[in-house]
Image (cartoon, rainbow, N blue to C red; front, top):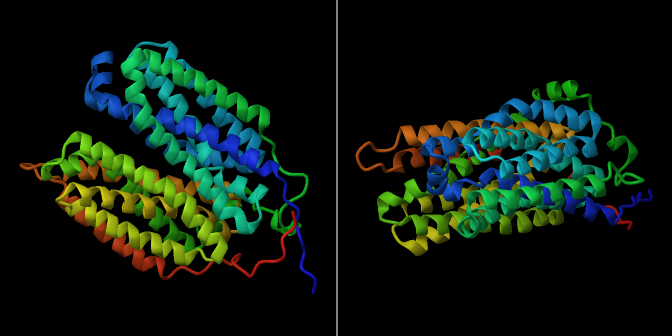
Length: 410
């Protein structure tokens, strides 16, 4: 029987690029105040926790908006769904540079936060609509990579711009960039290629709530939800409390910041390398297991490292394996829940991570040692949870889409 060849279009890379640009900017706006907390406290005349809320509100809003955003993406498509997120990012990102009071900046942050799920929940939708099956984990990896780049740029650039232009000047610069990113997406995005990169019957998708019902009946997706619940929860709380985690062992705030930055750098490398290997070797389950195993090694190092070099190596390992699991898991979730729309499965996985992020962040603070402020005990609990989901990952089935490749058409 002759193998069918499907046409793909070079414009898929432009589509992925404009999507990545707006995601980078959205994540840059999210992390803006984290590296300048003390400056922001002084500038706005508020407490540390109020500045923390400027970042924390993104997790809270995501829980509320995620499912409606997935419904919009699945019902109206990428151009409208992601376009809503792009407009919210541009308008409210610019608003932050115009207003001067804390209350109005918080309103603007919430506006940007509402746009976030319209962007992040579309990663696998875009990959499946524009890319062949053997490219989709790579495309999802690059889309997820944009999230990490946005965080890294925000952590490195914000203190520098604040020092030169002040907080209001820095926010205005980010506002202009937000408007540009929104306009670029609106002008250059396309809904779909002229012909699908797959068999026509593979384009069919369940209605949103039918797909949601079917997904929640899928045992393997439940395991995957639990893996994301623990994995993203670990990432969110470790990045939030990295200084508090290492300070009791004698590390400085600067050393903690470098460790956190290297975690993101490791994640960027992981998101580039691991999904490509997953696509090339036609394996999803294997790479999820490898990522979780590497995550445990890195987390143990961050928890117990007593030398600076060991801490930095552990941070890179943790970021590389933990963050590389994201795009592979997103694509795996879309494949095992087919014909559920990708926006639904993607949104549920990120939603699980946002819920655990909030829970783990508060739990880490609540259960730290009252005298030494050490977070070793809650970190050991996280290591135990990571070992548990590693064991569960061995029970996953391989993706039904991971079959031998057919000849490529270009």
